[in-house]
Length: 290
Ligand SMILES: [Zn+2]
Image: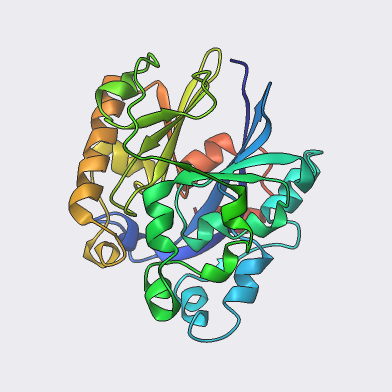
């Protein structure tokens, strides 16, 4: 299947490095909010997540949500949101047919309202949990319910996370029990990567000569996958299930050992960002912080 994939970014936030990997430095590091634009020959323009948008600023303008923006300061340029980044590529927001949502943390879904014609594909269990979260409880779970469009459920395609689709002929199959062939042609396979959130949708993408595994927030840094090292105890406080998180990271590590040619892409990894995001609109001095 001839998929075209654009790796893009919509803003970034900063954290001390030691929050995201054990043994990391105290110094603040930049964490890009990556999203992906996939062009499918039959199903058109598809997004995997959206990164930050102006709606994030609106939702965090007052307390208690303001705490979110204070803890993870976000930098987003005028045309730096998904809508603006896609326009630069000649893709109109109305042309996006599907948005595949890894999970419902604000840095992944802030742009949903910008894409009026898109259908939303996500793991059922995760949305059932998130849709019950309100107020402070939502906030401490990294969820801002105001970012979810009012007609979300009318445009929803929920995937059962326990579905077992096999035989897509990738080394991934040996490690991950649950997967789902989204368009029935083997080109885009959803793989549940639980731990960071209750269910988290990773995506396996196959091009003619390349394989990608988009692993969302299974870890923050590619180094974590190579060395099998997770974040420090502080980050565990915002992890949904730490035991599952460690299990998922362990599987990604062993997949990397077995087949390093499958390019694993954590959504906030600066190293992957430098390699895959071709048209970044940041200042050079910002990039030094990665
Ligand atoms: Zn997350």
